[in-house]
Length: 253
Length: 79
Image (cartoon, each protein chain N blue to C red):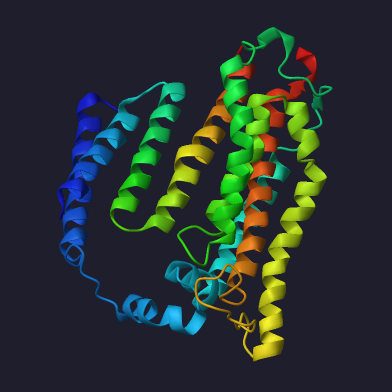
């Protein structure tokens, strides 16, 4: 296509999209205005009804718990897809685990990275655990805490070797953790169905507002989601790392 | 809208533009990571700390990590 033609197509498309944008944005509610009553209702009731001071957690893991469960299974199936896609193919083979092929061995990890990485592993895991355990009290929860926990494990790779990372978080164990944790969510929901008559009924004792052990099943689901997400992210990075570090085309090795 | 909110909105717009204008994937992943962090701060300033946490862990850590690993893989093959 000629330069003129391309410019014409671009200008036509840009004009069309900007028209749609202006049209769409002109219908938005004013800044800071909350048009739905749903949010207000939840902020008013959640603390009394669920004893959870983090209304966001009460919403995502209780009032709208089914949504979150399906979201969890989106991540679950995405990871299964990656595992299938990145498995060792017929024309590839996995080298004995060592970091990088000799031909492109990168600079050795600097001492500074090692020291900071090693020093950060403990605090990161602790912080991740805190974010998970206090998900129903303060901002945070299973998803955020799970990713923090996974990055704590990834620091082992950054500060050390791929091998120690694999030994600490073996693929089989991570796969099992991911599956069991994902189905724990469903099991809690089914338990609610049996105990309260509805799927995901918050049937556990609610406890005192502000306690770590309160808000019924919300912390339980938080822990399940955290394990699922942490295992999913470790598996993802593990799979990508294996691709980048271990798998070589046979003719190149 | 408060001053802080305006500042962070401008910063996010600037860093988003810089992500688009960076053409080399390696620096681009760093720019995207910085953009993810700024977006997290934006959510925090707009009083959505839960979303801010998710944004920081995914946008500033997980996504750039995946890009870096994919780059390591494809560049190794190209050699």
